[in-house]
Amino acid sequence: MTSPVLRQCAGLAACLAPLFAVAQTTAPANTLDTIVVTARAPQDARDVLGDVTVIDRQTLDAAGQSSLAEVLSRAPGIEYSNNGGPQTSSSLFIRGANSNQTLVLVDGIRVNSPVTGLAFLETFPPDAIERVEVLRGSASSLYGADAIGGVVNIITRRGNEDRPLSAYGSVGYGTYGTARTRLGLSGASQGFDYSLSAGYGQSRGFNATSPKNFSHNPDRDGYYQNDFSGSLGYRWAPGHHVGVTAYSARINGQYDAGPDFLTGAYYNDRAITRQQVYTITSTDDITDRWQSVARLGYGRDDQRNLSSFPSRFGSEQHTYTWQNNFKLTQQQQLSLVLERLEERVTGSTSYSPNDRDTNSVGLIYRGEFGPHHVQLNARNDHSSVYDDETTGGIAYGFDLTPRVRVGVAGNTGFKTPTFQDLYFPFYGNPDLKPERSRNVEASIRYTGDATRLSAVVYRNKVKDLIASGPPDYLPYNVNRATLEGVTLSAEHDIGATTLRGSADFSNPEDDKTGNQLARRAKQVFRFGADHRFGAFKVGTEVLVSGKRYDDAANTTRLGGYTLLNLLASYDITNRLQAQVRWNNVLDRDYTLANSYYTPGSNVFFNLNWKM
Image 1 (cartoon, helix red, strand yellow):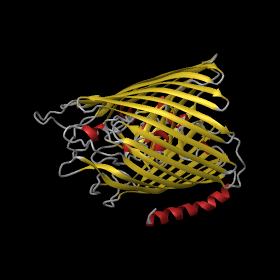
Image 2 (cartoon, one colour; image 1 turned 90 degrees about the vertical axis):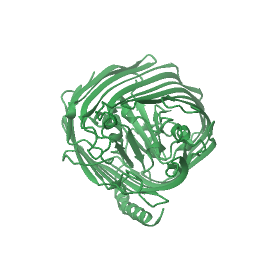
Image 3 (cartoon, rainbow, N blue to C red; image 1 turned 30 degrees about the vertical axis):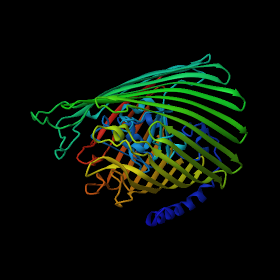
Image 4 (tube, one colour; image 1 turned 45 degrees about the vertical axis):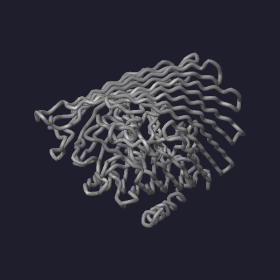
């Protein structure tokens, strides 16, 4: 890491040392660890060597009117932006990486559009999700293309083993005429597990654009949204399970595209977006040392823009995965992953070719040797478009004490050019190469029953970035960027009170110009507190973001801002709970994208029940 950032990171990490020393006076915890699957195999969260955050069901239940991208941005190392509301396409920046450099999965199946490289995050309301796992840093050696900044794995709700039928529901209403309702059921019996969930939401919204925007339309920009998910599984013998999952969502969202060039009249501009993901998975313990996991996945997305210049684009992705997990010894595991991805694009724009296939093979080794923890990854992706890409990763962790672990890791990543980059008529370049990255990081973590502390220092060098400009405005592999920084986080329980906070100090920089990458801040601070007294629970969230720029040239400045949110809930009975979320309490005027408005002070009331 270079000069000032390295010195800042080293100094901040050193400041944490006394905290880790003091924290070791806490007695060992006897709590059940969170299980995560993003590292390609189920592991206790504290055993994962990568930088992973799990956003749980409780946090998602308290999201209220917030979008999924907004909820994710409350976790360390993540920022977001959108163009005027939760119904519009959202950009997610993990550790300063571009939005299309983060791989988004739904139940392990990729949903990034091959046309744009982005995932339609607006089609995933938080109340439809069981949990979200975020893996920061290059992870192509685990999942292949597009995982330069990290991986977001959205896990839908499903039934659990040995639990009778239970039903749940919610209904809520708030500012801007925002309303949401959900009904669901789940259970497991006699080897079967099942779940069904359906939700509907709508909002009148707010005006998305300022008069300075050439797309300005002085109307409200609202949305209508519905989603459905379900799962069905059967354990036909001990160690053998087969299951299917389904997720389907549709959002009809308004946006501004300005007046008609000929008539000057405003059009009711809308984007109708659909997202579907289906999986069939068979998990089989062939022997005591060999587990086979075979998965067929199908993903489909489609967006129709209804405006004075209508357009449509979409894609289909077929994924075939066979993962074999071998227990070499009690402390060592080897996984062999064979995968095939078939991508097909459709729409009003003609791309030629309009398909590509990728065959992949990967190896993952994990070893536990007393206080030493090792993980090695290697993967080769052979594409019909860009030939071979080989990526690797190595991570090492050492337990200084049973509660304190230090770690180092290095990983490589890559991102494939989109169909729009390669084959867009007149402005595509079929000779583009994948973008590539090299990420190194170091960490120290303390995990106790009442205190959790961590510090992560990282540096990600990205080359062959795709950019376009004069004279021909064709995309070329011309740019380089350095993403470096430190993330500090802490959480502490004091009786019925939980305090948490994080600080991101980063330098997402264009290597050629030295400019700060667009819409990313160098400093972001997050603070929160929850307190329960009897049936009541109250909480607060504070987000402080430094200045950003809206353009690569750093000529359009977006000022820093501070947001205060308040939360409260009351358990009316053990089956009925009332919630309220008040976002932007101080009614701050802030900007995520130049000349696009963001919500003012807004409140949402919600009633949850369960059977």
